[in-house]
Image 1 (tube, rainbow over the protein chains, first blue to last red):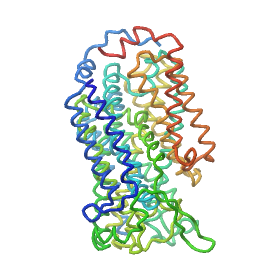
Image 2: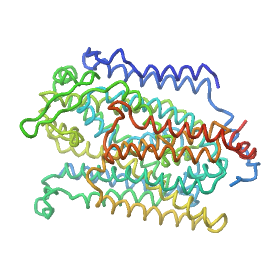
Image 3: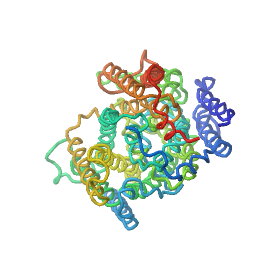
Image 4: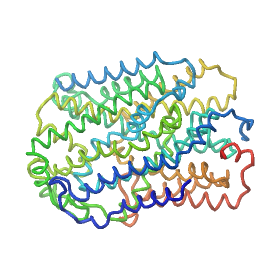
Length: 77
Length: 517
């Protein structure tokens, strides 16, 4: 998989820890506390990131593999 | 009475929809357990999202925001949006491919073969069942409480035997009706019925959450006025304490979220990677492409449900809401109190109650079905060996187990202690602690049978230790800041890594079988 994908996902995990907004009581659009507005926006950014990940790193081979007949002769329990 | 009629109409509609899906039932066990891998993108999104969202999505989120403030969203919702999608992408799609190729319908079938161990299934089975059962009970008790609150005083003469019933539909009756409705459609159509019903339920609870949000904000004078009157300490995440109540009823509420708790809470949503009922939903997907919509839209669906509920919870802290000083064990009532106090409409009360029931039942059906599937496939069919039962017999066995599981859960719900709700976070933490097992099974060729045993044992022992320290339930953080799930997860991951490296690698055939080139 594209290493850039891992980097973007790691960055997304880091951005979840918005320590700079912890005590920010400002209101965005006059009704959303800044910390809540940030995380609502974060949810949308996460969705966009996943759309991008699916575009650039979709595991096509898995679907084809799942449809191939099983030639391994069962498990080795 | 109008509100009760609305709830009954909702239950009837759900029942009809679930039973209607039986007309598409193909009569095979594969159709009963995994809908013959035929569920498309939209229904997969709705059924997976509905299953991951319990009553907590509407009721708990509002209560938690009332208690801790806006930090609730980042703590539980935006983190889930990211981590759930991560599990769907990295675990779900791969398990779907493996499950489809080898005909698995339960997790244990996969783990037994991947780790070349029959006994691993017998170790994992009671752990998975033990972690699902409290989760199921919470759903049934949540439904009972919701109906009890809505019908308070409606039947002063009929239901007066117990003062706790307050003239409302008693819990034994509402629990019975909820279990009977869910059982009817799961019994009839299996996972296809569950997927159809979940889609309907998810749409209902999403719409009802938005409806409650719009109506409550209007009553409080609009979005700006509603937030202006809220307690300022709930608008930030800085930890603080406020004193509520008076006299002997005085108590301290801890508002805000410590940063380390915020960080370590990220491990809890990993539980979806090991939920047996989510595994079964993944396998219903028609193709791998069906996952695309679920992966992308899951964070957005979470936002649509949680942002309004968190705002309602924060608004409830203000004087205009007129909320009594609720102790932490009663904050789950915030949404219903806000609806009852501010809206006064039995129609809206009925619709919101239907929404809460939809959130509860969308998880219950999948859990009942998955337990029935596990008993059938991992115990009965596994012990009997292949070819012993034909498809019709397998479906009959599965249906018998589903009936047995529902009946047992219903009886347990009558006996369950009232603090069963405190077990929710521990159930999720237990599943999350097992995630290193599934992740290494899928991505690390060197992961061995001994490593798998060590990972399960280490994760469960640390979980049991922290569960004991918590006093067997309730919120507990190590040093007041770190969620125990992070340490249980680490113990499971380290045990898997170290023991796998110290033991012989899996057979090359096993590697070839589970790691497509």
